[in-house]
Amino acid sequence: MRLHFLQSGYIRTWRHLLVRRAPEGERFTVPIPFYLIEHGKYRILFDTGQRRPEKEQSPDEPFIIEMEESDRAVNQLKKHGIAPQSITHIILSHSHGDHVDGLPDFPELPCFIQKNEAVSPGGTALLKKNPSAKWHIVEGDHDLCGDGRIILLATGGHTPGHQSLLLTLDNGEKLLLAADAAYTETALEQYPLDDAEKRDPYWQSIARLQEFRRQGVRVIPGHDPETWEKLQKR
Figure 1 (cartoon, rainbow, N blue to C red):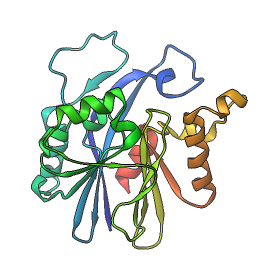
Figure 2 (cartoon, helix red, strand yellow; figure 1 turned 60 degrees about the vertical axis):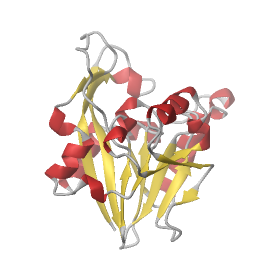
Figure 3 (cartoon, rainbow, N blue to C red; figure 1 turned 180 degrees about the vertical axis):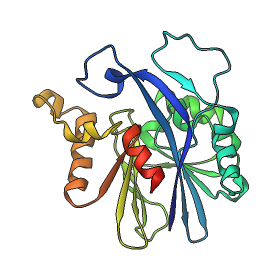
Figure 4 (cartoon, helix red, strand yellow; figure 1 turned 180 degrees about the horizontal axis):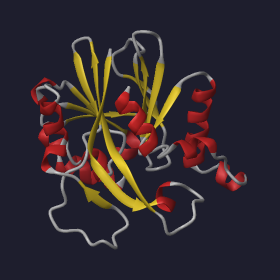
């Protein structure tokens, strides 16, 4: 198995919008990751990145996309010598634009999404916008290839049907691509303040990621700039 850490530009936002309990007023620029997993005869994309906004964005907007046309997932694959038509499967963490806007560049492919996401407003709009995708609606954890190496994990909270991805590499190392179940490393070090928060699906998914961490799994957050820099060097 080979895992490629790829990027579809950046988002400029406010730190408190991505880091819970952070003070307001600090700008924060984060990567827009997507991933390519090569496993046997399969080439699988986990998320498909962002597209450039059609209209100019106001500097006051909470989420400002910073990317060039070359940053589109399809173009990033070409840049790394990977033919886009060689992709065999797509797994979507959830239906937000920075994770799914590249999907039209990969038509007619099997595309995996959680049922709770598919029936949410965002998911319903996504399926309607991409009718050519061969949608596979899964419910809960799902072994993609049947060999235990690529597991879709239900981690709802950020959206109703958010999912993360658990990988077992050839050397036995386990990596968990959390996507937006945990934006940053800070999220993995936080705990609910009371019983009401503990019942929130977001915190339940954080607890699940923390348990994987305790078991020795490396959990990779979705938009942590420091973590992302280290991963790209690796």
